[in-house]
Length: 78
Image 1 (cartoon, rainbow, N blue to C red):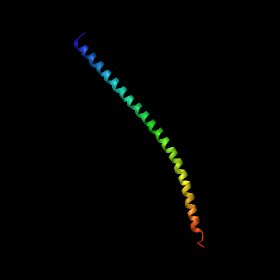
Image 2: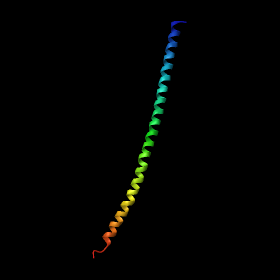
Image 3: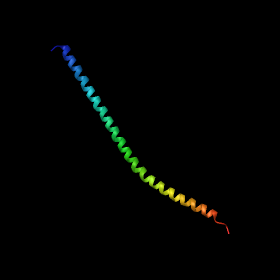
Image 4: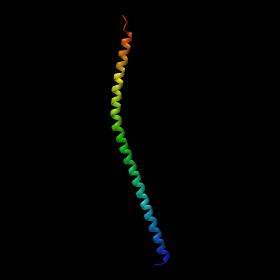
């Protein structure tokens, strides 16, 4: 086996290892981003679902208070 052939095999093997490593790392990053996004969406839904419910109840109460205030203002002051 000549030096050129050995050198070519080493270079080719090195390139293959580097490409395999980079492909694995990029795939791992994509999977990590997907997992992070899923966790973030779950956290947002756990926070905002009760918040929307609470805000809906506050809206109902404030509408009742405003209606009561308008009714009190319409009563003659006798």
